[in-house]
Length: 327
Image 1 (spheres, one colour):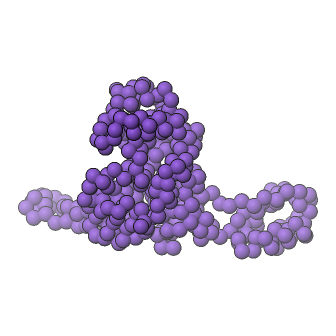
Image 2 (cartoon, rainbow, N blue to C red; image 1 turned 135 degrees about the vertical axis):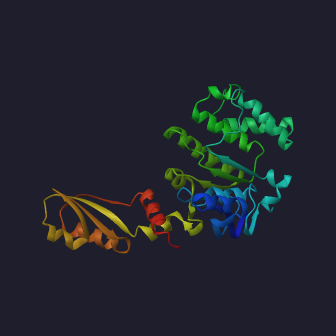
Image 3 (cartoon, one colour; image 1 turned 90 degrees about the vertical axis):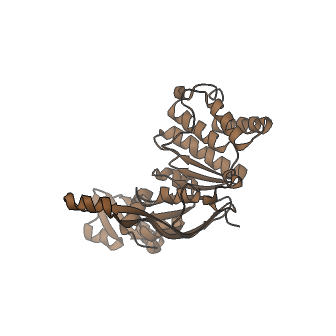
């Protein structure tokens, strides 16, 4: 059984339409008209147990609306959804015990109390016994390197420590499915790496399913082999991260340092010549001819150094969102 299954999932919001002027105000008051805003339109995908999947899209694309439908916070307008064997919007206790939602811009810990007090409240909500609670807290505290921090008031923790404590609070009931919305938002580089390492270890240890949204592409490349891309409420890509790069960045950049300078005409024989700076030349070469082109360069020219690079993943995602076409 899939951990997450969405079939033609849609969410429409009715928005009142008001004409300008006094007449429009009176009509709006007595006979209001509406139009539907399509936040999410007929998206379908399934995620297997233990997968970590990235969920990408620009602001307003429908990511958070989709997460809210998957976690039961809002009812879908159309379509079917099943998470961990349950229909989310029914909000059964058994379902809520199997999932968690972490939003980087929201907090559940009580600001002036030690984090441990908030964790005890969560344990009471989920009906976790003292022994199981202590075992889980000890294990997660070690994984998150939070020793000695949970007895301090939350306001005295650093931002990175607070985010780790928020993760601990969200995972104290050991959920099977994790919905993570910008979990590294605002964190410095070291704290981001620490959170990524923890999520990777948690996934491996508990075989938890993770759906991750992030504007930090390092989160996606470090944790996800598969990505979903949503654009204006429609799912436009579902596949491997490598496949996304191949589809929208079919060329590789080849930078060559030469022993002697060559003419522009001579170098242009080996590919789309991007730039020449003295004895350094940069080519754009289609991936399918990369091996052949590199071999020819090394054979024909006096090469001191050669490097092949892929375009930054941020640039690739930008091309996907800019095109907006289903792939």
